[in-house]
Length: 301
Image (cartoon, rainbow, N blue to C red; front, top):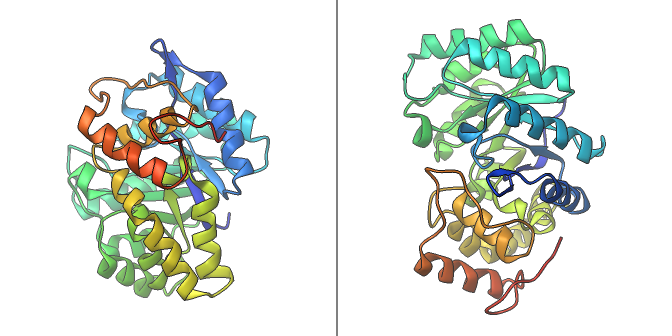
């Protein structure tokens, strides 16, 4: 598959402790209408670590159903156990996912040789397009550009969500893979800078609530080749990029979606609602961008 453009790292809506299927359907319809190039359920933003196996499968199944073949579904199936990652990936494949997103193993901190063995084993056992996910801030281990370049040689490893926060790392990946490996930004605030050094898209948090705006940024840079316009959009969105991480993701983006009337204000512990102060700051940002009425909600979905 060809990876490029805007992919939304979907939040998982809950209501009364259970998956809110009705809200998930509306979220996906909003994404498709917003012109995204794909959706990514069951990732970090989807609170995947708190989903049961049954819920994990259900979210992927419903994402495939509700997207209706209009956009590809890249299912999050990563684990710090290679065997578990294979099991989750095979399940997603059977459900009809177009590809799977696999984070570097967290907590057990494998060596680069271990990372190489982990991902090549999953690739060999599953035979589905795989997108690597490098996010050392969450996992405690950085996947080196040299390791990524080796993995890029594996036929069904098709790209990487790169969230190390380093343009140098992105440049090295691009250089070592000779620009033939799809690099997707894992940080909304670095999306534009990363495109300037070789990235071809983003797996985004903010596109949960602003898919059209983020697609406009992508088009300005990659399609229209209008750098000045891209910088204007990036600069306008930057306060919200930062606001979406004023507390741990996905707390702020779920608060935003709630304020916009899209989902209930519900998380799975150990995540919890925002502090009153930060919620007020985020509300002001949302109102300033016309996403909600000042002091209230506004349903864009």
